[in-house]
Length: 285
Ligand SMILES: [Fe+2]
Ligand SMILES: [Fe+2]
Image (cartoon, rainbow, N blue to C red; front, side):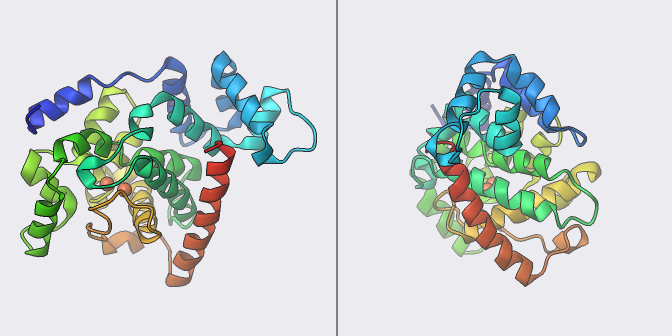
């Protein structure tokens, strides 16, 4: 299929919808005021997810001394971020199995990048000047680059040209280079996917504005800045998606929203790396 905006948007329309329970879980977890009870209510209705949760919580990664058979306890023990990650691996194998060929990345790289961004965004959201729900920052981080799963196929073979045009200073960042080539970049494709899946705000805004947080709607801007920095952390730790690694601009106005210094950043990089290993292990990967 020709690499045109029209075909890319058509590819978005062909992506399988989320299951009602996965969509329900994202809906609940995007609310500023939600708690674990709301999450339990959704998972309870999904037999497969309930079984999977119990199976993983009782696996070696969690190191429990006695078996948990009660779902509510299992959910309390494993936590919301684990559950959202689990649901996304099940619901969106297009991300999980994306080979990132257009970015010259590798299979699983997009998932790892999103996961690390999610964990870093959560820690950064704790430093937000306006109070943010850090679990919402996690979910937004987990979805932020899904657009790459869509545009990757259309970018195949063009990474060298895009990098050359960046090196010549023709473009500011990788997303602009994508847009010049395709008429659409991964943030716009991600936004279209967010609408296709009917995702609640702030998720589509994070998908759309994570490289240009200043353009995010007022009410979501602080959260999008957290994801913007979380994305940078992921790229700095080498959990990138390939050719576009660190080929984006840092918006230095982040300090209007996030109170972070170099020591905090170093700490977040360390902690996130260990969070990442733990989460991957608990997901049985
Ligand atoms: Fe991105
Ligand atoms: Fe990213």
